[in-house]
Image (tube, rainbow, N blue to C red; front, side):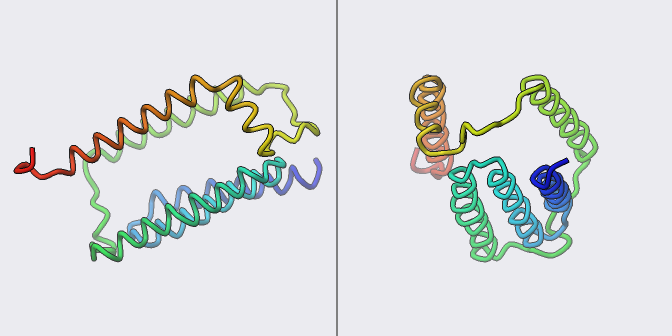
Length: 166
């Protein structure tokens, strides 16, 4: 086993452990900080796969913007951040079963789809290769995703309006 593979396995273990801690933490601020560790580990995995552009996007967008926004929203709204703030409902066992089933399904799909494939020298994470793939092979999916995100944005605006404005 080579050094990059060992580092990848260690980063994967850190990502999985911190993701479990982020989901299982009873304090919201601690969960957000564990999310930072998780997303940073994913960025490290991207670097090991020579996908530097994706690693920077991961750090700048998710770690730098999304998590900061979540922590800022927690602090701004003054919502309770103690141990009692994460409400436990009766849906917890069902959510655990569905989460495990989804994880197994995604894992089986990835293993089946990439069986025997090794990344070699093609530099798949460069801006040029990502742009080429997005606008040649994946252009339809890219456009459909943009329409779905636009619909979600419009729906969020409509739902956030008060009843008197409708």
